[in-house]
Image (cartoon, rainbow, N blue to C red; front, side):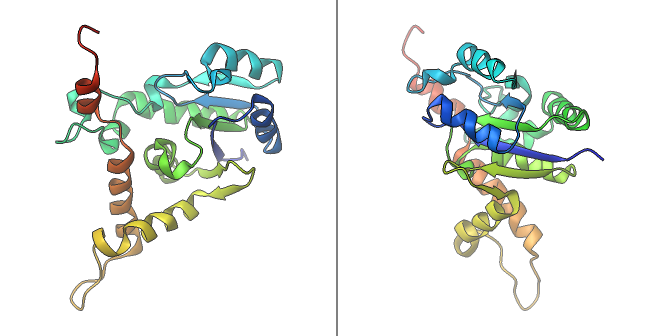
Length: 211
């Protein structure tokens, strides 16, 4: 039976040699880039052409799922009332669903896959709150590779969600109604999504005149 574990990783400002070491530690042989813009001013070793070439030299496949798993959307139909990307809406798009299916196909073929974005901490990235959320619900297991070389299961990040949002924002059980952990986690994911989502409105306001 195929291993249904998907890894995630943030490239941060790692030296490329260390990044490759992290991938090798977990036997990753396929990296799926989930950045909408696959370039980094402060870490040019992770610019798409350079990274693609480096990974190929190390027998690791590079793929870019910008349309499938990218988080920077500007279509009004994918935004909330505040102009932020709504992860629930993105997950309902054909492109996202196709990305999930392609990921499943890769796992079935025996690839060890890591979803890569830029943020070092998965808690601060859409690879957790937008993508991993759905993968778990599709029967996959998600492990997040951390900056120090350790990894944590997605359920541990869900524990972080509950701790961060528990008291002030999540519904609580009362004498008349029991609120389950599952309900609280669902609400916490939405809150986290709002906190990390790309703001199309803000990006438009900051765009230089004439650009």
